[in-house]
Image (cartoon, rainbow, N blue to C red; front, side):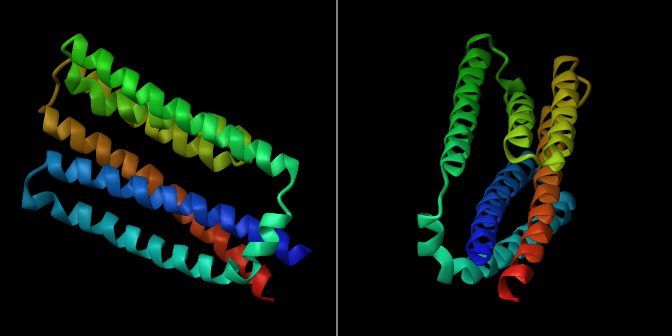
Length: 198
């Protein structure tokens, strides 16, 4: 029974890690395309190394939980289902907010604010996740990304820097946040996998 519980927890961690891998990749690509300059490629390479490490651990965690996959599905509690439904609601709400923000900004001729506003929506969505999963790390990462996004909005509104640089600043700032979250999940998953393979 304990093994099945650990496997379920590890699966949740692996799933969360997969999101952090994806979002770190997206933010890094956004930043790298904004700064079409080889002088900044080293920053992107660092993030791509972090992504590669995350993929290795994601595959490792899934290999460990594979023997328990059928039992884990049977052991799903009503609380697990409720948490899953709430996660979907948060995720869909985030997606709708992004679409609405994009349309509004285009219609008011402020499309250059989209990347900082996207970051703001992403940062804010970490707060309900913190409550849902009872993890303080979500507050810290959400706070970091929210601060980065607000700086990006202010820099854009007051035209304090080149827009490509602001986009890159926002993208790399968000990639730092998602990478930190990924590192947390790797550490958390490693601890859980040790309990599972004992």
